[in-house]
Length: 193
Length: 182
Image (cartoon, rainbow over the protein chains, first blue to last red):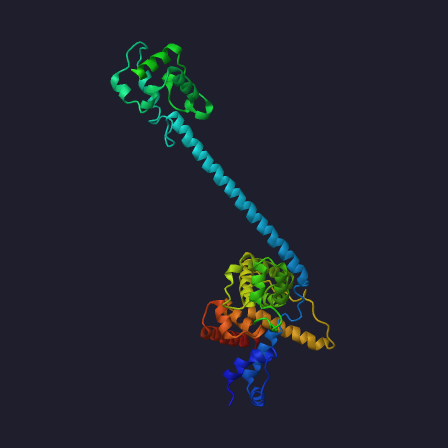
């Protein structure tokens, strides 16, 4: 006994030619209008696009595809190279900033007007140039290693602070903005005690 | 729905592996095997015949770019249908539902009986119009089953559903199309 459901399940196979109707199934199709309508639908659906010549040229599709994939791979490689270079540049910038900060006594996170310029403000704070530097201020200096430096080395270090790379002018250093030789001498004397 | 493969021809999986190892002829072979059915599937799903070639090209491009996404649960062709279906859906969205169907610009095969050919073309047009109105899952299951001859297990694997649910979608689609075409 052929049921409509059994026939329905076999329709795609018959439509694609991988199977054929049995005599019983053909009899059922001849008598069941619902199954006939479904069969016509499935048969028409199986032919959908059969007359379509697409793609017009499969060889061209694969040629274009391979070219496109090659371009994509090249773009990906270039993008990877760019980001690697950008990463290295960023790392170099960070290293440079840390190194510069270590040389000048600034921590990388310090900003203009922040605590970093203490090294400069402490000893040159006195309004009168001949006034002695207060011991309390000297104690605040964060770089005790400067105590052992000769005057020439300190002088060159202070000059380095004025160089653009160090951007010392970005900090608030009013007292060191344009120190005279005598002032520097006093500063150094103060640093050396 | 799988490509008919004779024992002396490499399987799709073998060709994919060969392509991954740098053999570009494997890609050409895969395109040759599946471009036609993919084009027919897209056309039956509602793509205009003038858009089919571009959509086929894009389908293969996306497939080869993301070959890791094919894990072999469904056939390679079935996977291509899924990618093509997604592209077509995006295209419909881009065009804001504007109808992409067209039959006039399609190449009709030569026929000794032009009346029979016209009747067949008219039947095809009505089926295609009807298919385009189906919800996506119903449309995909119906076309994969009726047009491509796929079985429910494979269709279910490709669409991420169960064979039972795929069967239900198919019968809903048939019922709805019969009503539309009555």
